[in-house]
Image 1 (cartoon, rainbow, N blue to C red):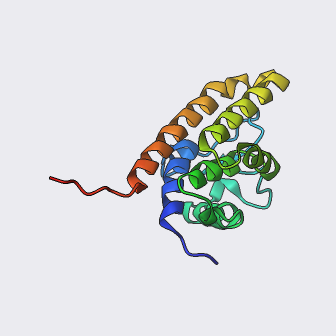
Image 2: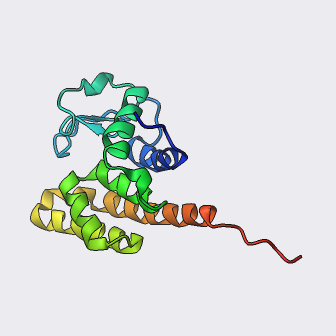
Length: 163
C-alpha cells in the first residue's frame, strides 16, 4: 500500500469539487441517462458493480481513489501537476481512453487537455443524448486547466530577490 502523497491530496481537491461538489452526503445520484449509473462521491456503479453505492462512505471512496486510480496507474511517477490532469481523466474515462490520450499528448498538458476536449465532443457526436453533459464536461476541463496552472506556479522554485 502506497503512502498518501501531497500530490494525491491536491488531485483529490479538484476531483471532490467536480464529482460531489464537496457535499458531505457525497451527492448521491441515480440518473438513468448517466452512463455511470448510480453514483456517490464520484464512484459509479458501472465501474464498481460490487459496491453498495448508496451507503458508500467518504473514507471508502477515498480509499478507492487512492488505490484503484492514483496508485494503480503510478501517478506519483508523472510530473506534477500533469498527474492531476491524468488522475481526473482516469476518474472520468476508461483506462484505455486515458492510455490513448497519454500516448497522443506525449507529456504535454495542454495537448492532453485538448485531446480530452475532442474526446468529449466525439462522444456527443456519436450519441446526441450526451449533449446534456457538454457544458459540464467542458467547464470541468477549463477549471482543470486553470487549477493545473495554479499548481504549477506554486511548485516553481522561488528565485531570491536582489532587494
